[in-house]
Image (tube, rainbow, N blue to C red; front, top):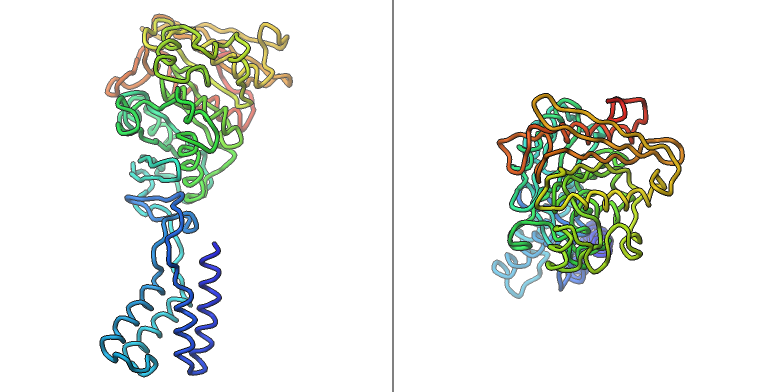
Length: 417
């Protein structure tokens, strides 16, 4: 950071002058080091967290600068109009300033986030601020674990979504961390992620930039594995998960979409309602020229109930089309292997799972159709909203799919049913 580098050089010069007994000259050097304007705010942690990247934070006086200002104030009171070098108060404060320069305090991650705890924090960048909850499994001891970003649906919050998906329990068993960004009512009156707004459909802008920036900060703060970062969501959260896969394929290694919608097919609330009801919207659905222009290279697993009356089931096919185009996976024109498996949950829903393979034969795309299921997280805990405990466990299947992408060994998946 330019201000920090300049401040360091001037501090070093002031220290040298002090050793030579030239305290007036040292004070003059430091006076020139004081920033007159705060620099632009960037990525910060707030609430229970400290600033992780000082360069991007809202400017605050350093401890050295604060002591220097206090020294000037004290000297003006004790020895007004006199030589500042003769003030005992100044000498004591100057000594403390030099000691603080020699022993800077390093930035630390969120101290409130303890292993096995569900901790709260907040992230800010130029696009806005979002709160979040973070789950670190009790087996976390600083190792490079995977991270799963979970995007709740409309009317939900991180606590509700964690309860309904039961993913924290799975994180304990399999050792990964879970990040739950929270959409406030100030951003959307129903707490929906704004997947249908043009400004929230782009890289380095709007909500995608907030979510990606939050993800990166958590990775850096806790030393997590940047090659094993995944994103999943329900409904509007599923739509935003696809948007992140489209706009940040370099950050997210795989995506899970439950009862979601394709990226870029709506530009307003009326558009969104039309797409949700099964229409294609002004930009077209999966088969139109404009709609098919969107494609992601990110491996994807998609769940949707075929009795969903909130988000029409046809949207699942449109989502699949965007990922199939991105991976060159099998499809009507692909010619690469596709496997279809059918199953039945005991006392629950039947389902059909279609697995698509890329040109190398790796399964990179799965589509699960949950028969007779509505708009709810399949296999979820009924204590959470929008859950259906009678379906196959979407949480476990998503994690199985995510882990396969990092370690492509023969695992029991939908093709093994």
